[in-house]
Image 1 (cartoon, rainbow, N blue to C red):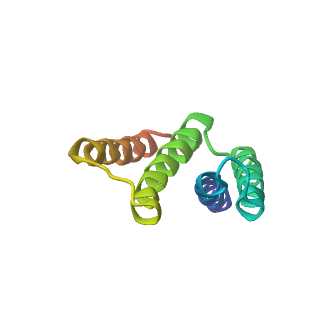
Image 2: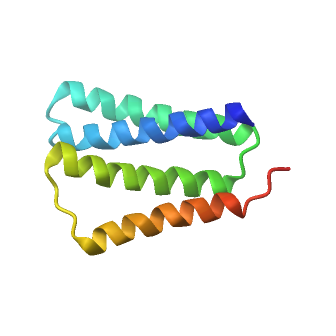
Length: 110
């Protein structure tokens, strides 16, 4: 199961890299970020699929992938792109993280 979670972590990191590169590609007009978009998303979906084949529950894996990815992209947007997040945004991020933790706690690892 450790391998499955490592693949899930790779899927999350790849998706975050792909999404950040999407912003940097400026509508696919910049070549290097555009390459990172395609490689990032391809790697994300491949890693997620392999993680599912190693025994991860689809609902839990997708919830963690989407939730952690969303939170990381929002946080990275603050630092890399000087995007603003108000108190409601930070509360939303906290709720996403809490939701991911509860989802994992409620899963059965048979």
